[in-house]
Every structure is written in structure tokens, then in C-alpha cells.
Image 1 (cartoon, each protein chain N blue to C red):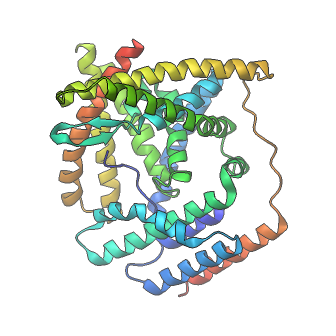
Image 2: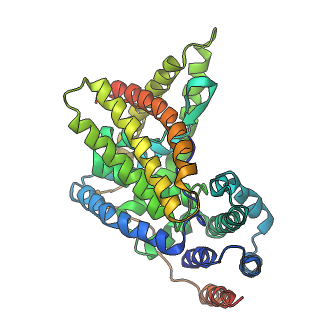
Image 3: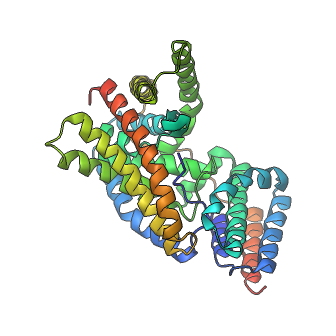
Length: 206
Length: 198
């Protein structure tokens, strides 16, 4: 994670229109992808999500292109991080970095139940659509109904939180956030990331 | 919603780190308050509520003209949970959006926290408390609408300070469109709090 942050800093330090340095940084990232056996193409494709936001840098085309490259490569690096570490190791990395345990545990629970709540939301939206046949009502009515749907989802979420607590308590949970033990970073990984960091620094001379 | 999540690359590193500096203090305060009141149920509640905000942000809020937007959720979290819990919940949400969903940057997360977890939450809380003379629906609606507008204003100022987007361009476009989004946010927040009877 520290390497990705360093990569973001390196991208941010690239002056406007300094394409050679962007090429150098992109090559470093590609090397990291190859070393960690992660295909760069899907990551770069998905990172194109950021393209519409770069319109904020209009009307200066040089600034637009520079901001786009920074954002695109930056997001590709973040997506690589998740692809390489996976969710569980990502959470352990956050803890190693000193992120408060309460926050890490909250994130872990959120990820654990995200798919469950998302499915519940979809069922509620489908039920609402099934009951809304006929002429489209005013947007104010639909907005209010969406709000009531959100409120119902929140009530169900609170009930689910109570059930989750009961399940945790029955397994010995006493209120203190617990996370899995973190293993030290492997030698090879540390050496590889140090080399990648050194390459980032070297790119500053491009 | 026109996302207020600033991606990486939009702010220079120094300015991005300033955002982290501003966000860190209030975040640690919120964690301290939440931790002090830590009872058995706190962690599962906060985890599931952060999950709710993340999922609820996927709800399409209808707007005039046949368009729609996504719920921001700062006002709903603030008025339903209180400001300190809302800050922790929204921090978890913004963190997941950046790390897992690729929505918003890592270096720029400090400013995203400032805009949505702090400005959004505290603006909603203050407006709701200060406007006690108004009927509750008006207070809640106003709190939600203002939380969206003030978070947008903060985003525009940061982008201008970075030289990425001049205020003359961003302010009229973003404040106008987010004003519409705020209408939806207000109605949805009102509806949700009515169901909760909060």
C-alpha cells in the first residue's frame, strides 16, 4: 500500500506535459504487474472509469491530458493493489499501517455484508417497481418513496445488526474489535517493492 | 449523483496531504468518542450501518427532467446516528469506495473525507439544530440539501486551489446540478427518517 501511495505522489509530481516521465512511471507499474503476475490490461481498462471526471480540467487541453494520465495510472495502481492483495490481506495491510482497529473491523464487517444488503435492496426495488405499474407518478412522489425504501432498508439493517451481534456474542465476542493475526511481510516481496520504489525515485530524473 | 469523490491526480501531492492533515484530527476524535461508548453492540451496528450507507448510495433518486442521482448519505447518517458515529461510518464507506470500488483516490481521500464525512455531516447536524424554529420536515430537508451544496462548494474550492478546474467553470456547473441532486437527497432523507421515526 505504501508503494501505491508513493506511486500516486510520483504521478502528482509530474509537470504538465512531461510525457517521458509518465512513460517511465507506466513502465515501472507494468514491471510491478508482471512481477506479481497480474495482467495490466483489465486494470487499465477498468481504470478508464476516471475519464469523465477529467473533463473538470477543461478548457486547457495540456492540463486535461496531464490530469487524465495521472488519474488513469493512479486508479490502475489502486486496482492492482486490490487484485494482488485480495480483500483480507488488504485489511491486514491497513492494520499494519496503524489504521485504528475499530475502523478496520468496521470496514471488514461492511465488506462481509455488502452483497447481502445489496441483494436485499434489489429485492425491495423490484417489489416497489411491481407495485408502481401505470402512469409514471410525479418525481416528488418517487423521490419520497425512494426515501421510504431507504428507511425500510435501514430498519432491516438495524435488525440484521442485532442478529449479527447475537451470533458474535454466542461465539465469545465481548465488544473489542478483533482481527486476524498479521504475518510479517515476506523477504522477497519487501525486496521487490523496495526495488520498485527505487525505480519510482529514478523516474524523477527523466 | 455527480460524484464528489476526487480521484488521484486531480490535486498536487502537497495539497492532497493537507487534506489528510485536516481530516485526521476530527476522525480521531470521532473514533475516540465511538470507542469510549464501545459496548458489545457498537461494532456490528457501525459495520452494518456503513454497509447500509454504501448500499443506499446505489439507490437511484429521481430528479426533475427524468434524470436521477445517487444518494450521498451524509445527512441521513448524521441525523440518524449522530455526528461522531456518522463520521466513522462515512470514513469506512469512503475508504471502501476508494480501495475496493475505485471511486475516489487514495492520496485525495483526505479531502474526500473532509468534504463528505466532515462538511456533509456537520453541516447537516448544525442546520438541523440551529433551525429549531422551523417544522421538522423543513429542517431535515434543508439540512440534507445544504450538506450536498456545501460539500460541492468545498470540492470546487479544492479543485480550483489545485489549478485543475477554475471556479468560473466548476461553480456554476456543479452547484447548479448538485442543487437538483440536493432536492432528491432532501426528499429521500425525509422519507427515510420518517420511517425510522427519528
